[in-house]
Length: 214
Ligand SMILES: Nc1ncnc2c1ncn2[C@@H]1O[C@H](COP(=O)(O)OP(=O)(O)OP(=O)(O)O)[C@@H](O)[C@H]1O
Image (cartoon, rainbow, N blue to C red):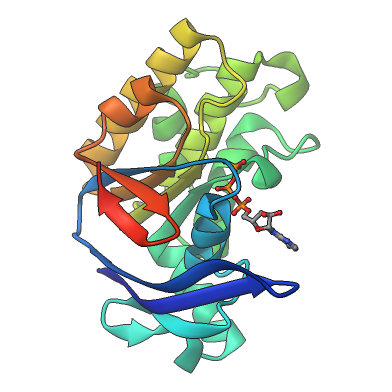
């Protein structure tokens, strides 16, 4: 469903991505690893539409994202993708239920699934709590529930276990794996953790020569 076609991106004359092409298969859980600064987050941001390539394109279901106007691109992202990014953290002034329901609200979907997802991530009955009442691992579970609540075709995750202890991280990864499988979503997860990458269907290494199988 997702094709990267000859993507290039530079910052201030420094090339980060150069003619990068890759096809992701639907439903596949892919981990992207690589040296610090090689461009993993940049790549994920471009796929998510938070950044634009200097040249090349991202095709979703065969359609180039750049051919869509802003509203159409937003609609497509909102309905077909889920995000677990540090920058999009759980919103502090909304309850857990409201946080998880956000993608449903934006897509005008029925809101019932928010409680089902909170149950699925082990936070059933805590829908009226606020984020400040949760631990880091619990917050990450809320982020997973929110990322998958609208059954996206593709989940994008940037270091989803970055700030968690190994035991909590293992639980979060197992949950991520289980919930993507249940909803049939593919996933692209950027990580430095070999333990996290090990549970992916495929590990890709990003380097200056592109994305290669590990
Ligand atoms: N908005 C920006 N403006 C200028 N330079 C940027 C910007 N975003 C990223 N860069 C630069 O692009 C390069 C790639 O950064 P990126 O965050 O994609 O790397 P990464 O592989 O995710 O690194 P890490 O593993 O350390 O998180 C870095 O040299 C970074 O400084």
